[in-house]
Length: 294
Image: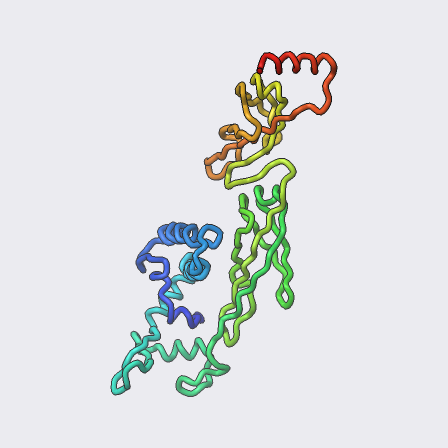
């Protein structure tokens, strides 16, 4: 008989995700993604968000797989731990409630045979401890996605897949990569914080990119066309309106990053460059302009 995990008897993962027991795999995945976006620590700073994120991730790790979900459903049918007064017992005393007569046989298979009654060989299962670490990746790898080999003390080496468009500070969960459990308890998880390096030219905000661009004071005053680099390696022409002020921001639409059909923009912050040396003719022209401007 398949082994069951102790928490499968104690936790209602369907309730955690807020779906019915007959929900389709597609609905389960859709609901999980919605909850994950809502409670991810990077987007929700409330003290309870990270714990809630871990709970829904644990529930999804079981229900997302048909085979694992089927064994979990079987465990739920076999019995659940309940708290409350039993027959002839005082109030508040914990007792077991069984829904099928063969639970003790399955229970013995879970904790090992050879014990007497409910005396479990080796003690109750204990889940392993979750671990945390962080990695540093380049700006380019954060956009394209990458793989990082991780080796933590006392753990076997493995390759962590970093998805494309990961944000700086994002938390990636590697299920079952934490410390080993005791007495057939499940392994803990590994949570990896991602640190993204800086780019010499571009800054990123989601799918949008930002860049600083020097503009001559003549173009800023009179207007003109300038060449602006984009992340894909091309340069595009951008119109500078007359009277553009230093520090103002212009937009290049659909020149940001792409994800599932959505495309961000590129924002260009104008920095007006004032010349540090002038020829005699240039100085004379500026002096004439200054007189007219007064």
